[in-house]
Length: 227
Image (tube, rainbow, N blue to C red; front, side):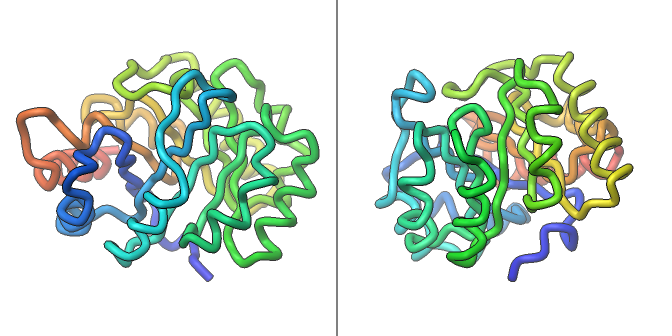
């Protein structure tokens, strides 16, 4: 099974802002740029205001790349869909604490089917909301913007939340890694890692409108090494 702790700090580019008419080329650029995972933001128009994509894109991603697929379900009742996304190729499935009524059961469901389980927290959701589930998850995703839209600026106060979560995980001696998603770019990624992130998600910074994805990824990686 995938070892998240073996790749730290890791880079998980989100394809939300990619050119979906050339997905095969997009994944090739991510591979050339040194991505560790591919982050897929699934939005249902209910848990978040927007709709992104679903199973067909995850299936296409699995065919197009050997990189592990890091699927972030921004949907209501995620337990109804996790098995389908794992069958489609997800190596990691992350559900929101705010959207999941029976979080422990859903985490166990993800593990039973053979994927790694993550739990996500919106900016206003406290770290204490996941304290009881921490021993059972592989990953905690801290949203540093409000979920639903790409291109937002990182909310500085959320880095203190990452710090609190880092201390809690370390004090409990747990293997869970911390992923950070929202507004990450070369100018702030070092601060994100210094706060305690093991995995960083970047979208807009990876797909500049008039630039190279490979160059953008390498710039992020260079900035990550400065932390």
